[in-house]
Image 1: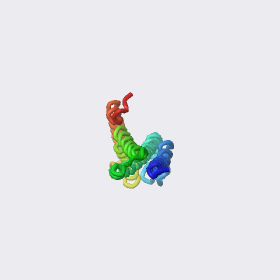
Image 2 (image 1 turned 90 degrees about the horizontal axis):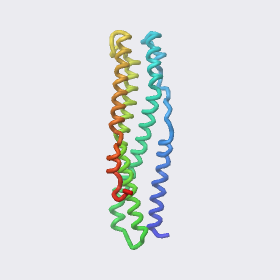
Image 3 (image 1 turned 45 degrees about the vertical axis):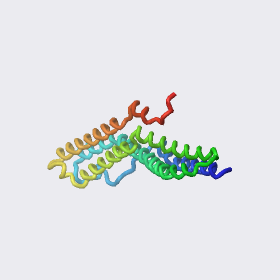
Image 4 (image 1 turned 180 degrees about the vertical axis):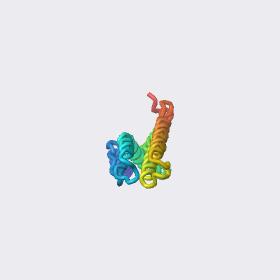
Length: 202
């Protein structure tokens, strides 16, 4: 086994091995965990108000779980891509200078470059960073809004009805913003085609 063969196998093992945790995150669904006292325990609202707020949260539970799951998936893939594209960008120029008559030296340089190109193409086509930010921001905005209502409901209005109405309106705004960002970040067929490496057409 030559040094170049060992280098190629080591790179492939590292790339595949570090993708393992990412793959597990991509496959699993994230469950929501209790984040402290809920509306049902709030001293600021009547039983009727607590019921309205609790029902609204239950209707959003699936959406919040989806946002959290998507945010973690996009974050994991973005981190993996960022690390390996950086490694490849720094490594390839030095590997190119060291190419010898050993056929595995060319395969090593080509593999490292192709890996980086594939990750860049996937990240750009599916707008991984933008989607992560959209889902993470939506999740954060909702829980910030939730905490503000629990801690200082007077900021939403003078009466309970006004407070709940203002809260529900802002929840709807957050949902629309995230939905808009999600649909805007969906790749088109033309964008995916442009991101394919040259020579990949069949």
